[in-house]
Image (cartoon, rainbow, N blue to C red):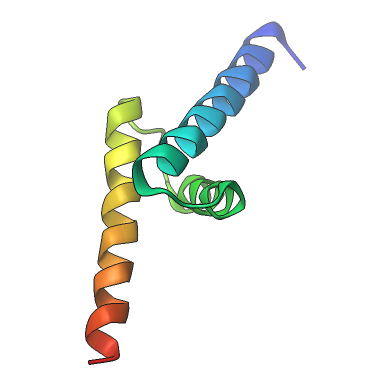
Length: 75
């Protein structure tokens, strides 16, 4: 593994940890759930997001949409 690849991997791991922590704090979800959502978001993303804030807002929007669909489904 080259030095550049190692730096990308470390950056990816740090972003994953920061996203997980922020989701736990802002939405009050369990850490395991936040890891699952962050990992899922990275799996379905075709390209690397432009910024940290962009990926965080996309994940939060995904969570809100799913919560609203569950609420409307059971009414």
